[in-house]
Length: 238
Ligand code: 4GY
Image (tube, rainbow, N blue to C red; front, side):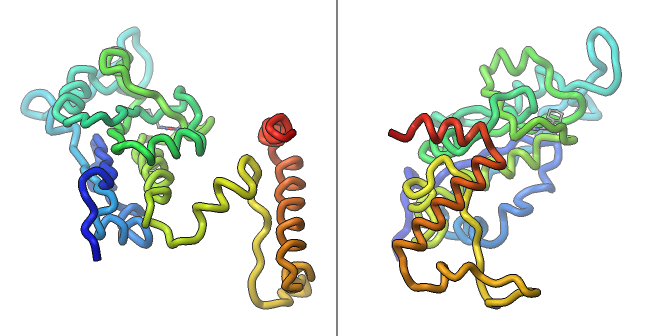
C-alpha cells in the first residue's frame, strides 16, 4: 500500500466553541476510513483558547441592543490568525452566505482544504468577517443554532470527492451521465415489495434501454421538483 503525500492530504481546520462535536459523523464509515488512510485530515481548534480574561470570554452583548450575544471580533480574529492558511479558503457558514452547490464543493475538494469558522450565539461581529475577508457560505434558507453541523456537511461533501475515498464507482456518473439533474430512482430486492414491483426494464438486461429509462426518469423528476435546475439543464442542451 502506498502512503499518500502531503499534496493529496486534504486539510480541514475547524474553529469552534464545541470541539467535542468533532469528528462526530466525520469519524465513521467511508470518511473515517479515509481519514485513517491519511487521505484527509481534520484539525479542530477551540475558539475559547483565545477567549479573554479569567473566564475566557468569547462573546458580548450586541451593539445597538437586542437579544442574545455576539461573538467578539478580536477573539475570532485571534483564533483565525493562529491557523496556518496554507492557501486554504477561510469560510464562515451562515444563512447570509452564497448557497453551497456541487460546483463549489468540487472546487474546494480539488484544493488544499478549508478553514471553517463555526458561528454561535446571534453570530460573529461583522468586522471580523470583513477584516479577515471570510467567504460566507450557506447551506440553505434555515437557521441552525451553530455552524458546526454546516461545517460537517461541507467537509463531508468535499471529502467524498477526494480520489480513493469512495470506491471506484460513483464519482463518474455524477459528472457525466446526468449532470445537473436529480438522480433517477433506485430499486433492489425484493422484486415485489408490498405489491410494488421493480420496473421491468431494470430487470431486462438491456443496458441501453436501462440508460434511456434512467435519463427519462431523472428529467421527469427534475422538471417536477426543481424547475430552477430544469431551466439550467435545458439551456445547456443543444
Ligand atoms: N443555514 N447555512 C447555516 C446556519 C447557524 C448563528 C451564525 C446555514 O450555513 N450555516 O444556520 N448557521 C448560525 C448560528 C451564527 C451561524
